[in-house]
Amino acid sequence: IAEKETLGFQAEVKQLLQLMIHSLYSNKEIFLRELISNASDAADKLRFEAINNDALYGNDHELKIIVSFDKDAKTITISDNGIGMSRDEVISHLGTIAKSGTKEFFGKLSGDQQADAALIGQFGVGFYSGFIVAERIIVNTRRAGAFASEGVRWESCGEGDYSVEPIEKTNRGTDVILHLRDGEEELLSSWKLKSVIRKYSDHISLPIQMRKEEWDAEKNEQVIKDEFETINQASALWARNKSDVTQEQYDEFYKHVSHDFQAPLTLTHNRVEGRSEYTQLLYVPSHAPFDLWDRNKRGGIKLYVKRVFIMDDAEQLMPAYLRFIKGVIDSNDLPLNVSREILQESRDVKVIREGSTKRVLGMLEELANADEQEKKDKYTTFWKEFGQVLKEGIGEDATNKDRIAKLLRFASTANDSGEQTTSLAEYVSRMKEGQTKIYYVAGDNFIAAKNSPHLEIFRKKGVEVLLLTDRVDEWMLSFLTEFEGKELVSVAKGDLDLGALEDEAEKKEHEETETSYKDLVEKMKTALGEKAKDVRITFRLTDSPACLVADENELSGNLLRMLKAAGQ
Ligand code: ADP
Ligand code: MG
Image (cartoon, helix red, strand yellow):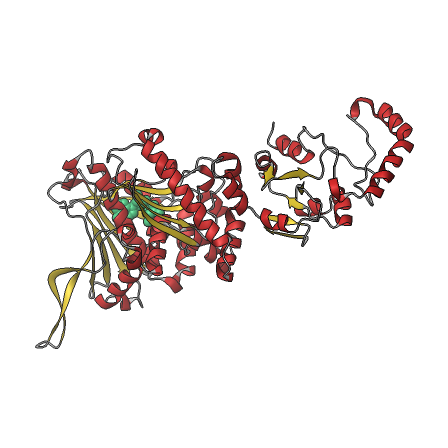
């Protein structure tokens, strides 16, 4: 059997600990939420493993979390009878940070405390937040199914290293024991702990218990009894009626499922009945995660079947272009032993995905079309954070393409600002008399697009042009060729037909010019030979002498550059 061993933290853990203790102190109570959240996850994991191995429960089927404190020893203990950890698991889970996005996160740290404090709130700190209030943390744990002699003790002062050693542990699960720093004594009160639990952890679906306290008139003081009482509501939040859940509870539940520290932008909570029965509680985060563009990243949906946790990141439940959505889906129809492979083929899953997609689009429409400024601002935030991802839906989701098109926002020559605020509907409502098409120009960036020589004639005639600068734009537009019957056309492509926007006199003048320059054009064609496909007289320029245009059916200059950059 292994002896006590001292190991060094991964460099990132050291950095995180330093940063966290200093920057999160003003919000120190969150350590309890994080540790309770871990205990609840541990119970979920045990329930899931026990689906195929009931013996893991032993004779202890009642999953719960117990919070206790000891005034004399100055400790707070959070105990659970969940899955527990083996020695290897302790080392990898409590000695390193395995979260996705870790590299990006540490790459963004600037050394400026205030800026970094804001970042850490987005990253999520989890277990290590215990060190905000504790000078030493001891974890005693035993994995479900392991022998009493296979317990493990982890211990650290949250500086450079930690120790692990084997211990006897009579029961399954994990005890996290916090030895409080001087000055944190106010936490050693059942009133204080209860209020923190109710504030942050009321949504946790298993009971969080504390010892009862009673006033003893003879001794004239509070005495702690042997009995336990449950502090939280202890029912799955998504299974409650909407009217029984407060905004704060929804927000805290979001933080629990998403590991995000900031409140969500908006949410939708529904019980769906009919061919497929399920409950969905879905959130739009208020900021993009560090790994939004990570191709290996899965979805943010936790799947439950009849309240039993089945898996995290059930990517089949949401289309890829909504991968930023977080939340819970609880199905009444799927089998408990459902696997990722089964999910892929399941008709029930298809129904759930379609239903959830519609809900999410509905939730976004509600913000996008709202009259209240608060909701409008939320949509602006949403668009800044996730607009580029939503655009993927135009190509990916033919069924909902029209709804997604209405949610798109673009920069435009109408205000010449880089902010993407113009919807296609707004554009259409501002169209000039006689204008039949929606015009856009694509560029590498806002300045390039705004100063494109192709815009000259449009500016002169006062015709609005959308300025597209995101990498996905041209790909998206290959799927979005019209909006409400109006063709979307690039001002940089082919023979620009301004239709009724050109008046008769102009047309005549143009024809005359073309005839008189015919010879010159022929000479230029011969001189350029293979280098140019065609040479034409143009009327779209007002200040520049010449410009390059792409053929109607060819990739535009911008798309060509993009494909080259991608190595194609
Ligand atoms: P996160 O919860 O986001 O994964 P944490 O820092 O909170 O990150 O926890 C790190 C890991 O440590 C968890 O993913 C889990 O594997 C393990 N862990 C923490 N607390 C417990 C616990 N009470 N029981 C079992 N495993 C735990
Ligand atoms: Mg955690």
